[in-house]
Length: 178
Image (tube, rainbow, N blue to C red; front, side, top):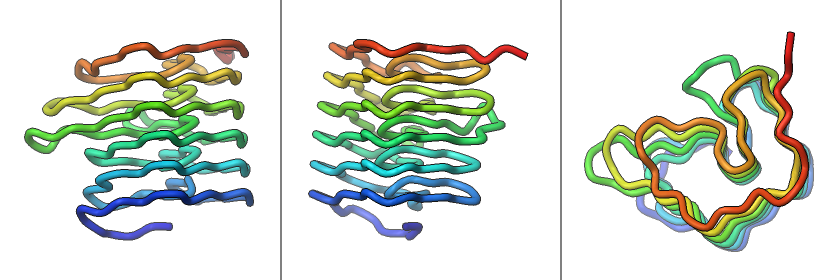
């Protein structure tokens, strides 16, 4: 879905099909401005995009995501340092004044594959110049592949997020070489 809404909550949604996006892709793709809370949501389908791509949300602005999971394969043709591919969130943004972004109690077991950069088991990339970003109690047990900027939990980050009690349990972190 792509839409513009403010100050709302999404709970208990799930997806089990296939999403192929020309740009951002996820069960929630490219919302404008605020997603306040996403909770108890899941993806078990295959999601493919050419920009920010995530199992639950492609791009979140000042978003709080709790108790959600991905078991589907996530792949993206990310060709920019400002885009990401992740099991829960492709790109998490917290940079418009005093704001917060929280990713807590989520997990990923689906493989993550970015053809170029910024791939993470939970979050592909974080952009945070101002605001509070907290990444707490998440785990990934799948393979993460990209040419650069890849990790079991977070692929890349600008700013200084608070990262506590996250676990990368198994699978591979595989850098693609030319």
